[in-house]
Length: 443
Image (cartoon, rainbow, N blue to C red; front, side):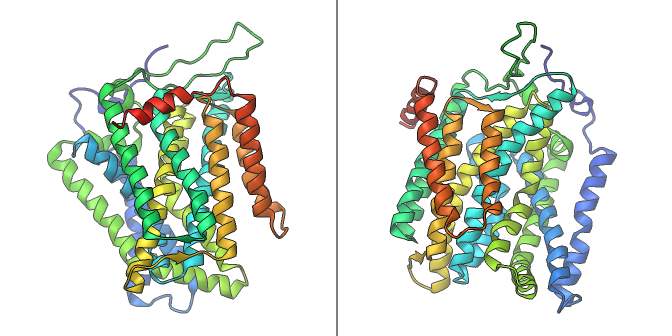
């Protein structure tokens, strides 16, 4: 198969600059800062929490885009080992802002709600949508695509996601988050970063995306992945991020700084009033504050990153890159995001303190941990199938359509039962050896 071409604006000897479409995208994002600043500092919408939440919410989405573009550009500015850590932190900065703020203010139940919502939304809808988008894009082109193939390059994410998911059950038993838990989860993520960096230096065979042919027909051909070269990676770059990475250094660095400052400005001055406005809207409408915080804030903060992954999925050949991106995000949220909560809570209290979990929060963490194990089990064959994606999405949506007390606990046990069943039925297809090798690579 012919290699995915690099956009003409990124070819050798080309004068690198933003296109008209890029400027329009940047302008739309920047324009959200105007009503944001007016609402935030002039009191213009005081007494109208719904308007405040809408204006600030749009600015937070724009901030997430600014940060996403900046993180792409950072890959060309700092060493790769540093970039791995910075990219992981900055990309989810909006979600961290919400968690840290709620924990700092002692709103522990809402902090747990936002954390569990972010994790379940990413895995329960984000992962499946990658597969569904790729499937539909292939069908429009007359192709058959029913699975995404992973390989040993994904082993570090899967290994450390497994460790973090297992440790989450410790939190369920303890019914609290402590600084000790933060240390363990941070250690898991640091070990992942070191392992991924060592693996990248060895540069094993590329992770690919294979079009699943109709197995009952020998006439259909599969789509091969792009080669693992810089050129192949650049083929996956899109929009503003693509051009930013290839601007001259004298232009690129100031633009990255401006994007980072714009994102930081919104999060610094907008996170708290946005949360307060959402809580006021919930009170006025008689809606559960827990539910709104659990799903609204994570959706806004994760939309830009997920959108990029979905665009990759629509290109079919880069669907694996999109899925890998969301797997890494899940690991980040399931380690560093949780770890940040006890830290912020202790700072807010003025002394070292454990963050207690209510009965509802314990159930939410249990369900989230069980979902993580099931989603992980679907990937241990190094194949993410359309059937698995639909099952994952269906189970996620089920919680909204069965308004029965205790449904979350029941769903959690169902996830665990399905995990055990899937692993048993596919025990000969599991790539556990690659996970063990990834673990030994830390040394």
